Length: 632
Image (cartoon, rainbow, N blue to C red; front, top):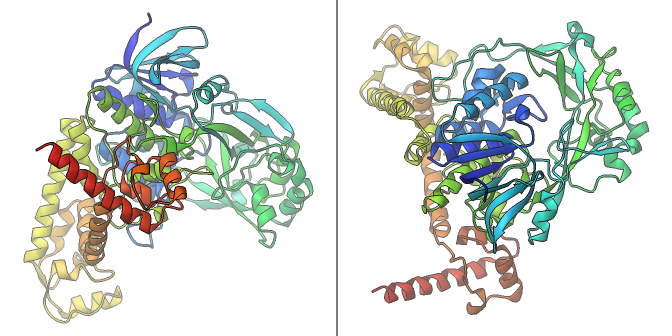
């Protein structure tokens, strides 16, 4: 018999890294198995972390004790706040990453983690006792046993790359695909689907004319991802902006049938929110130009990533249309762009814990669940690693609800609704997004991360100290007043703050649009506000936001109470829907097929009517009453 581990994580991408770190931190003897140790934490596509809604995920991962935020800070080469002019709920942090430094740093973090070992191998099949997973076997015949297995294979299961009419098996460019695992899962009765994504060609910076392009620098004042003592270590550099034109459009239209997407070669469904350049030209023929961001991939490389240029056209056509673009007239392609098809597990087969409903001890996380994006993968990996550890310790699953985190929205969407295309997180998916801001991710989740054993005592004490500062500043605003003196009135008018009707407490003043602590610091003819400069900027911003949106926050908290009334009603795993009178055959079949874990999940199933939910609520109340009597 081979060696036995507490948790085995299959795959060394962003999901696998967070899953293995979480399990190991929680005291589980953990083995990370990857097809290439050199590519642990590799960025397969764009050289960036964060972005709209994705930045929220990174902040939440960090607050719970994950690694992505700190690694991104240490290896970021440009930082920007997106949607800065909009409200705080939709503002998001994004950084350009040094791809080489990122994966090296992440590998170093994993290699330094206690209880975690790394092995290079390809998985052939899982090992079973009945329907229960007990380990796995590699393609070299080695059997390795485990109490829980987490699969995080990304795009590697039956990965097939397309460049024009050429196809070849790969998990990503230059990496072997996993060819046997997908078939093995199908044989066990697990429902497998097919998806598609793509990436851009990589360009040689030495052949780009940056002098005629628009430079896009990062923010002068950098906002980090991590709440802890991470440091910005890398040199900060600009990106550049260029545009397609009529000539680009002509070349692509003329050759579009040579694209794998338009030749019928690809059967998988691609992401509509991240279209290929062929899709943009075909679906928006009246648009004169499309914006392209030229992004550096590493300070150690000349490669640039033309964001917005995903393509599966033949290489010669890629070169031709690229050279039609301003600044790229002499460009050389280092690596061709391509589309990739891959197998995924339909996520409605998963519990909220990311454990398979029918196969105990088997967890899935990341792109294998139909998602796209490094951040979505990392969030799932973290949750799967936590729950694999808790399953082994015979503890209840750790589940975040939709009102608690974007991670909760992500997992609830996947297990309740499933996906027919690569799922991406958007702020619009979070109905309680004013409660789920980037700036309060620590307030929402640090206590949970500490209780789980993922955060060190040092980090927890930092959190408590920050909370003390917040409380002291809030108390100060309840005691100090602003008076409508001549200088104050002039200053407020200049910054478009509504006039002061009379002397106001600062906590009331800060509720006004455009009213900030920074503005108060400029008032010299009354209460000395200059000492406000001594307060932490992050603390000041948090307090401002809480005051300014207090009414809206209160309203959303009221909505949350209604949501929790339904979401908190749990459905027994083996519940017999046939025993419930009044349900239509269609509703009963959908409930039996999806097997929701809560009434809240049942609500989201297409075709399950409000009337059916009411019937179920009555049935569950009767069941609860009956069980209560039996336990008396």
